[in-house]
Image (cartoon, rainbow, N blue to C red; front, top):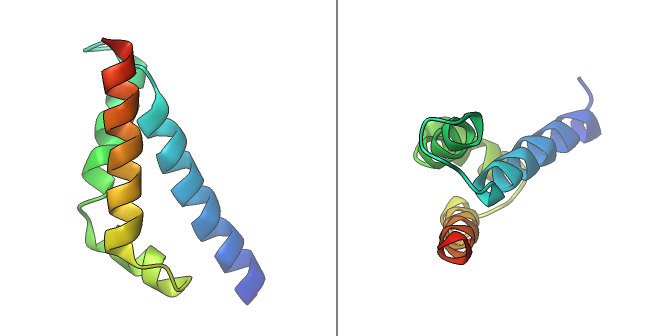
Length: 77
């Protein structure tokens, strides 16, 4: 895989995580599972590796994604 293809793949994974965290989720539903999986992904070594591979600070990315999740949850209430 060429470098630009890898960078594009990493960006798509991070965007998908962002979208999953924006879902308004009902417990037990598919959106809820996607959201929970996205939150769990933020605590993995793979997330750290992906961020670092495209010169992103994993802590900053994680913090911003959690902020998105919190805002979405707060708006749903």
